[in-house]
Image (cartoon, helix red, strand yellow):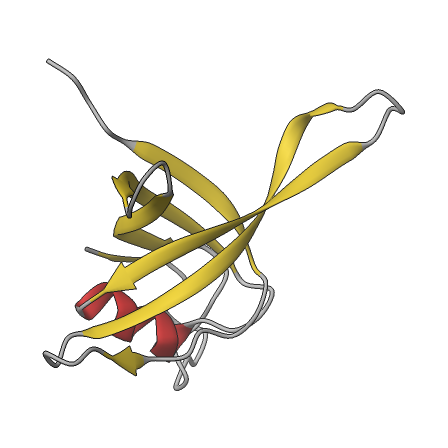
Amino acid sequence: DKMNNLVLTGCLVKRPVLEETENGRKTTTIVLAVSRNFKNDVGEYETDFIPVNLVGQVAESTVEYCKQGDVIGVKGRLARLSGNDLQVVAEKISFLSSRPKDYDGENDSQIIVD
C-alpha cells in the first residue's frame, strides 16, 4: 500500500483569516515557519515557510484559537493542484502553544482538532 502522510510542527507566520468558498465551505491558508534540523554550508539552521490549506472545522478552530507566533502541529497530506504544483492539506491540527480567547489557565492540555 502507498501512503500520503506528512507531519509538520512550526510557528504561524501570521494570524489566519477565515474565508468562505462559493459553495459555502470555510477555509484558510496558514504559513508555517519550520526549522530544518541540519545546518547549511555556512553552519546555520535554515527555515522553510510552508503554506498549509485548512478546510471546515479545522479552519474555523484554527482561526478562532491561533495567532501569529503560535506553535502548531499539522497532520495532513499532499494534494496536486495542477501540473506539478502541490499543496499541503491539513487533516488534523494540534494547537501546541495557543489558548482559547477565554483561557483562564485551569486546563493546560493541548487542543487537537480533526
